[in-house]
Amino acid sequence: MQHSVSPVIAEEGAVVGCFLVRPPRKIEVPLEGACGYIMRLADENRVGFVDALKLELALGTPAAWEVFKSQLDAARPRLTRIARYCPQCLATRGYWLDAWEVPLADACTECGRWLVDTCGSCAGRVTWRRRSLLHCDCGISLLAAPSVDAPPSAIALSRKLVARAQGRDAPIFSLLDGLSLNQCLHLCQFLAAVAGRTAYRKLRSVSELEQLDWSWNVATLAAAVLEDWPNAFIQSLQAWNAHAPEVLRGSLIRVFGRAYYALHADFQGPEFEFMRVAFGSYVAQYWTGSIAKRNRAVLSELSESMAWVPVAVAARRLRLTAKQVRSMVNKGEIPSESRLSQKGRRFIVINSQYLRDNASRLRPGYTLQHASRVLSLPESRMRHLVPMLCPEVQSPVNGGTWAIPVAWVEKLKELAVAAPLLTGKPPFRLCMVQTALRTKLTKNAAAAEMLRGLVSGRGLRYWRTKGNSTVGKLCLAWEDVCTLERSAASAGPTAISLPNAARKFGVKDEVIYALVRLGLLRVDVDRGRQRPTQYTTDRWIDLFRAEYVLGRDLANHFGRSPRYMAAWLARNGVSAVAGPDAGGCRQLVYRRGAVAVALGDVFGPGCTSLDTRVEDAIGEGS
Image 1 (spheres, rainbow, N blue to C red):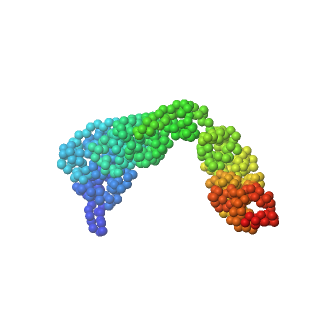
Image 2 (cartoon, rainbow, N blue to C red):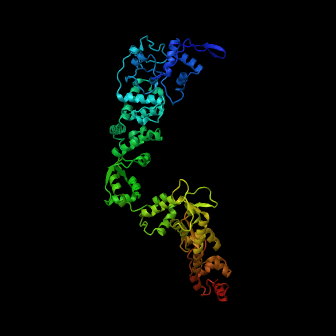
Image 3 (cartoon, helix red, strand yellow):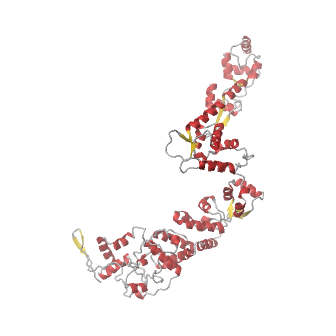
C-alpha cells in the first residue's frame, strides 16, 4: 500500500509535528469509522489518539471533523470514549467499522454477533486512548475476546440505526423512517423504560449509552417492542399498570408517571403520531380507570374503537349536553355501566357501539352552543333569531336545552360552502355576518331579515373568503347591511338607552335605574351586543308620564319647594310610590290619579296654569 507523507503542521510559525505515514480512509462498504480511522492513523505513526486527532483537525480532514462535531452536534451522535467492536469482523477486515461507533447499534451488522467493549483477558474497558489499534493496554490482542450471537430483533435495530446514521433507509422497522438518529435514540430509551417498567428519564447525553452492559438492555427491550408494534407496546403498558401499586391505579398520570408526560411533550411532533395512536388504543381497549379532564390529550386522540366512553365524550358525539345524556341514562334509554375510581368516585361509562348504531335516534338536534360554534354566529343573537327563523326548533323549558333541527343547520352550512369565492379587492366596503350581528344590526328583526336574505339569495350580496366556509364568516356588502338597519329603524320605535332617558327626564341616571328596578318604567333588553343592554322607547316614556308624576315637577308647577309639596301631599293622604324611603329612589314619584283627587281634580297631565282654588287650597293647608 502506498502511503503519503502529510504536510508539516505549523502553529504561529513553529513546527508542531507531522505524520510519517498517512493511509487513506476505507470508504468501501462497510465504511471505516471516523474514530477507528484516527486510531489506525495514530497506531501507524506511533502517536496517541488525541495527538492524531489534533493533527487531523489542523489539516481539516473529514474524519477528524466527524469525531469533533459528534461531541457538539446531536444530529450524528458518535461514541468517542469507549471503543466497541466485533472480534471476528475486526480480524477479517483489519479496520474499525463505522457501524460500531453508532449508539445502541450493539449487534454487528455484518455477522450478527453482539459487540464487546472489554478485553477478554483483563476485563478492562477498551477506550480510544489505548496505545494500539488491535491490542489492549495489557498487551493481549483484542481479537481473542469472546462474543455470542445476538437476537434477530437486536440485529435489525442495529442495521436500522446504522442506516439512519449514514443517511440511508433500511427496509426494516419502517416506524423509524423519517427520524434522525438522535430521535431514534430517545425513542428507544422511552420504549425500553415502558417495556422494563422502569422510571423514564429523558436521554441527556450519548455517553449514557456507551457502556454495553447498560446499552444491551435498552437495545434489546426497544427492539422487541418495535418488532411487534403496536401489540408489544400495548402489552407492556398492560403489564406496567398491572404491577403498579394499588394506591396508584385508576389514574393515568400516577401509573405511568414521567412516561405519560413524555408521550405528549418530548414526542409531540407529527413524526411520533404512531406512539400516541398506540397509547390511545391501549386506553380505549384496556384502561378501566377514570379519564380526568386534564388528560385532554388522550381524550382527543381516542378513536371510535373505544369500547366504553365517559358521559362527556358521549355528549360530544351526540351533540347534546352532559345533563341530557345523564337524563337519558337515568331513564334507561342508553345502556351504561357504573365504574368506581381509586378515590371512590362513581362515574358512568356508555357503550360506544350503541352510540354509533343509534346516533340518529338519540340526537334530537343541535344544542344552541354547538350550532353557534358550527355556524360561527354569536350565541347571544342566535338565542333570539333561531325561534324567528326556524319554527320547528325546541326551545328550552324549565332548565332544559335547545334542540335545533339538524336539517336547518346543515342547510346554512351548505349555503356558506356554496357561496362564491371572493377574489381580489372589491370596489366597495365589506362586513362579515358575525360583525354585523355584533355591532350594526342591533334589532333582531333586522338580523333575522339578513339571514332570510342569505337563505333566499335575494336582496343581499355575499361572498366567502379563502379558508372560511361558515355563515358567520361570509362577507356582505356594507351598503346592504346599512339598508337593513334603516328599514328596521323606520319599521319600529326608536330605542332609547337609559342614560338618554335620564336626560329626557332631567334626572340622574340612578333615578331612571331605580324606576326600572321598581317596575314603573318599562324597558326591554338588547342582546345583540357583546353585553346585554337595557333600553326604553318614547312610547313607554309617554305611558310613564301619563300615569306618574315626579314630586319635583309638582313643586315647580306650583312654585313651591319639593319638601313643602311632599309634606302637603302626605297630610292629604297621598303616598309616594317611589322615593328615598320607598325603593331607594332619589326622587319622589306619585300617581297622577291620587294627586288629582287630593287637589280637587284640578291638576291633570295637560295642566299648564295654576288655578286660584288650588293655590288657596295649598295655602290654607300650610
